[in-house]
Amino acid sequence: MTQEYQYLSEYIIKLDGALNKELLASLTRTFEAGRDIAEHIQEVDLIALAEIQSSHYQNYSTDVMPNIVFNDEGNKYSLELDAIEYNTDEKRLCDLGGKGRSQRFVAFMFIVGSGESAEFRFPSQNVINNCKSGDALIFPPYFSHRFAVSPLGTGSVKTINLYCCMQYQ
Image (cartoon, rainbow, N blue to C red; front, side, top):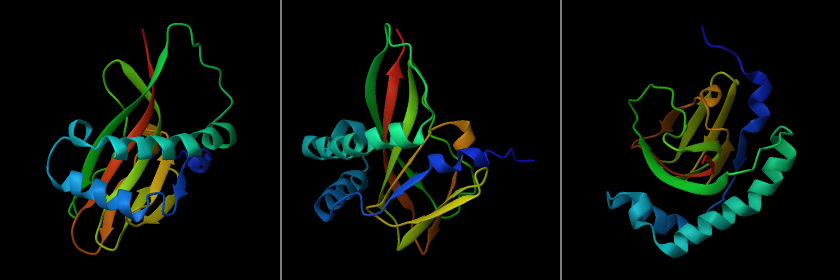
């Protein structure tokens, strides 16, 4: 039985065309080179992703996230970056939770490669987003927001993910 988190469905935001054509092409080339994205992303691309994150994070944190107070004593904030490829035959539910010494609290998922488009399903929230290359999704990276990806067409779906994190001391 799947637990329902429908009250959290408003935490899933889609940004149509978040990446311009030049940034999308550059990120796709970096991803397809088969190297660790965090180690090989061009600085100009990383800055562009951080600027997109920055321009949307304030509204997301004010208008979407619950009113919570962080105990900021001894905590540091950072961004983490990774990339994931979802294949057509995968049926698993994914989440973007972090490991180690940081706690991810917001995920920006940029779609950089897919056939024509892909369906991102959040079954617990009963939310489906059809995304194409260049779109982005913003959502909490927790177990409550597990999702499945289904490419619509042939090939796989590639995402570059930028996370807002709190580092515990």
